[in-house]
Length: 199
Image 1: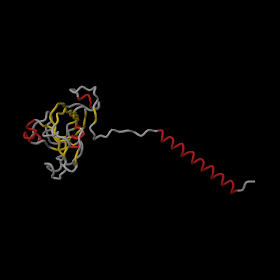
Image 2: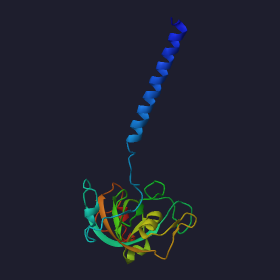
Image 3: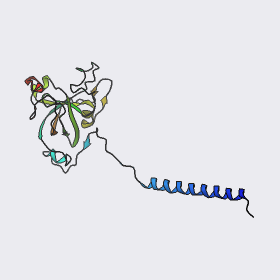
């Protein structure tokens, strides 16, 4: 004859076995579901070789509209208010310096788009003003130093705020997908000296 103690022990054993079984099923279900893989947003990414070099607009997401496209020369900068390498203070948009923040001598602050260089694509938003004097010579876009390094396959030095190698300017293609609400002039970029950035 089973005692009350024996029956309680049996219940405990059954409950423990049920918990172990449930844990095993849960673990196998979790292991079977692959983790989502996301592309880092800030990194320069390779563009398919099937996209003609003269049609960079084909490499932008379908839900984005091409408002302007063209080509220019790009330089690089990093304005973190440290006073190093010609740093002129915090960016004009009021946000801290970051990867993906570019400077334009004329486009409205907050403008967004993509640039292309040798099969690589990088997303940007306009957060500062520049290049200054170089824009009089056709250098119409300042790329953040980290993105510039990724596009050119070099390194970014956090201490000196410089890009490795000897490239300071690169020929780029651009696509504008959204005009910003900040001050500036929509359309083809014009030199800083024109004062269009005040518009």
